[in-house]
Structures are given as structure tokens and as C-alpha cells.
Length: 547
Image (cartoon, rainbow, N blue to C red; front, side, top):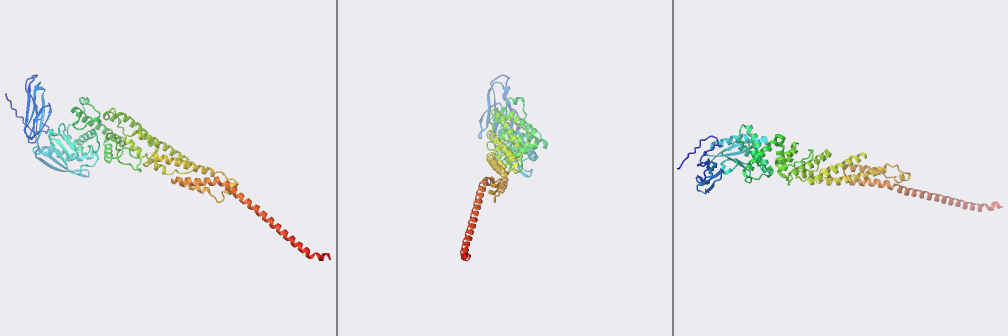
């Protein structure tokens, strides 16, 4: 017996079971026979030039390359256990519909390419994307990233395999299956923003593309199917970081990962809220370090740590831009058992970071530490946080000792602390400032002692207090070398004052003795001169006296 069937395409919804057209054919395939009786077979012939795909039961394929494709299976153990779904498409003419869509401040050039025998698909996609793209942009908060035309092309199951749509960020093309709903179109459109250029991990792109597709669909009044996480799928659970690339995983694992990614994205969105997510996406697109300065007057520093994985960056950005914790979600959904200790280590270092940041007050922690935190280099971060805490202790000691001298600490320690060398340079600066304060303290203490008489003579013409004043000014200006030199001069003058005084006393004393000798010599000379004059006078008058 030969039985012929006419499988009629009755039209209607794009996802109908039987679809017969010039561009695509799709229909179910089954077997006949007696239940439980083996030996039956199935054969399907597809005309030449069609690309053929089969879902469900496996069938052998032969032919192709310009010949008819034959799908077959022989010696079925039970005809009623067999079911397959065949779809095939062939290159054909497209009807192109250009769209000019205002997306924020940008104009999106979109071309809808529908099969010529399926104008309804083109009309549906034109409506969904012209309304959906602006809503996606507003929800996500990033500028429209496609610089040129965006092509949206209809395709059959055979071209997309198990996927309802694909976005190619190399040529900016979205390929959507002929029977896909609005959520699929919006999901692929969301990949314009969420692709490997923003985050590498597949679960991030897929989870948030679905999240925004569903939300945008609700805003424009469209409906569709979403990824649902069932108990059956939970049996194929994997850490989302372990999700392989397209075509690597078995179908049950693939289905679980899609559903789990969407579920996690919803949990993150509820905790972060949509405004918080927009801050995260903006920071990721700008390449910002997750750990930004706490004070706006400090250069924030850009460039993501080169060793940082996308899942690490997303966790850091979420927690730093929203002020909420997401580590529990990462532990439950994202990381493997091998990576879970990293989360514990990260928490410990972040606690230390916050403690040191609180201690720093208005001072900004060095960019080096923030970079090490962002790169998850926790050993290095812990080491430099300890150095930073030590410098902050020295800062307080410097402030205390400077205050006792009625001085203001110079700005150089803060500049060194916040500079590119960070704690290492600040440690050197703090040591130098403490040493400079010690010299100043010695000078002030020495000059505070009342000088003795001899020291006062030694200090005649000297003003060591002027040097101390100069040292104070230099210290407050950050000129530690100048401060040390001025303090040393003041100390030297005061310490040398007694020796200088003694020398001066000795010189003055010797001078007085010399004057006394000269005076006595002059007096003696005068006396001798008078005596000789007297003698001559006596000799002149002696004869008169005798007579």
C-alpha cells in the first residue's frame, strides 16, 4: 500500500507547526506501523538547494550539493517512539524595509530583511524594533553603540540550530528565526549593548539581554516566552562561569544556563535597582577601575586592571556603585568550588580597605592599592594597606609633634601618599618629617635655656632665633632640607656660644692688661723726664746757693 498525504499550510501564527513556502518549509515527521513491532523505516526527500535541519530523533542525511537531500532512518524498534521535526530554507529574495529610529541622541539606521513570501515577519520586526530600541536605550542607559547600518534578517531553524536569534557584533547583523516572538527580537537587540565588548562571560550577556528584552517588551505592550528555571533544568546545574561557548554544551546544560542567567539577572536587578545598574554599565563602558577615589577632588584613574576577569569586574562594580553586597549571589550561582575561597579572601581585604580608608579621612588611598583590589591581587593589596596604615599612624604623630611646636604639617606627606608611588614614597617622607621635627625640637629646647654671662658675650651679633624661625617656615612649606639646615645653624650657634664667649673675654682681658702696662710705662717715663729736668735745674742753680 502507498499512502499519500497533503500537509497543508493553513497560515496564521509564524510559529505554526506546518509551514510551506518558497523560502522555508517546516513540518513534523512520524512513522507508521504496529505498536512494539520493529522493522519500520522513515524517508524524507527535500528538493535541491534547501538547507536542511532536523530536531528530535536522529536521521541519516545524504545528498545535497545541488541534489535532493534524503533523510532516513531504518529498522525502527517501535514506530510510535519516533518523532522528528524537519525545517529547510533556501536562499531567496528579501524585501528590505529601511528604518530611521531615534535612539536617544543618535539616529539608528536599521534595515529589516524579510523573505519576499513572508511580509508579515518584516512588518512585525519593524514595529517591534522601531519602538523597542529607544526603550532599550533608556533602560540600559548607554549610548547607541552601532556606528553604521544594523541589518535584521529573517532566517530558518536550519541556519540557527537550537537558537531563535543571533547577534553578530562583527558586522552588526541580527539574524532572527521566522517563528520568533517579540522577546527574541528584543533580546538580540539588547545584545547590541550586552556582548563580549562589555563583559566576556556569556552568562552576563545572555542574562541581562533577556532581562532588558522582557522589560522593554512590557513597556511597548509586546509578549513572548521567557527562560524559565524548572526543577528538571536544575538537575543540569553548573556554575555559570563554567558555561561554554555556543555549541559546546549539551542541550540540557545550555537550557539551564540560559534560564539560570536570566534568574540571576533578575535577582541582581532587584537588589541594585535599575538606576544602580545604569551606573554599573556606564562605569564598565568607560573602563573605570571599580575602586574609585572617595573624594571628588582626586584624579579617579581609569583603565581596568588587565588581570581582572569580567565576572570579578561586574561584582566589584555592582558593590562599589550601588553600596550593596552581591557576594552571596556570586557564591550561589557564578563561581566554582575552586574559586569560592577567592570570595572569602576578597571580603577580608575589602574590610581592611574600608578600615584604612576610614582612618585616612580626607586623604585618598593610593591608586596602586585600588588597582590591586580591582585586579584581585589580594596579597599585594594587603601588604600595601598595612604600609598605608603605618603611614597614617606617622601622619598623626607628625601632627601631634608639630602642634606642640605650634606648626602646621606640610602638604608633602599627603601628596606623596596619594601619588603614584603611594605608601613607599609616603614612608620616606614621613621619616624625613619626623627627623626634621626632632632637629627643630632640639633647637627650640636649646634656645629656651637662659644663656650664661659668657654665652651672652658669645651670642653678641648672633640671632639663632632667626634661623629657628626660618626652619619653621621651611618645614611648613615642605622644604625639609632647608628646615634641617636652618635648625642646625641655630643649634651650632648656641652650642658654640660659650666657647666664643670665652675667647672674647680672653681677648678683652688681655687688652686691658696691655693698656695698664702702657699707662705705667708712660707714667714712669714722665717721672724720669721730670727727674732729669729737676737735676739739670739743680745743677744750674747750685752755685748760687753755695755762695
